[in-house]
Length: 140
Image (cartoon, rainbow, N blue to C red; front, side, top):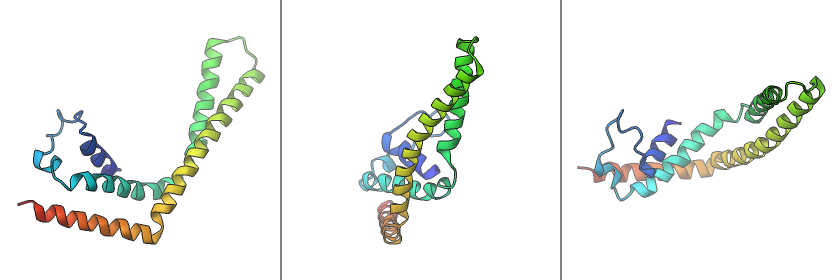
């Protein structure tokens, strides 16, 4: 996850951590290979991060949380509603969010599966090593 964060931070030129951390050197940001290497770091970060994340059912957890919050807010806004209506609100909110997020989970799982396919993973690794050597040898 740190690889993805650092790559996005440098690639997008975000400066919200400049007060905590020193800004990156201008040589690093202006390096000619950086525009190729940072997207590669993002792909590597997604590849490394997607493997353990796949085992957690995010859609279920977030759907349940949204269902509980929706029921709570409906109860706060309309305190005279019966329990049956609140149960229906909970079910509708939970199923709607779960369906949407399950679709997103499936897309991310497909991307992770494609990136984890051994020939693709080896190619990404070799390109990473190549760019790492290029960057290491070009700095004095």
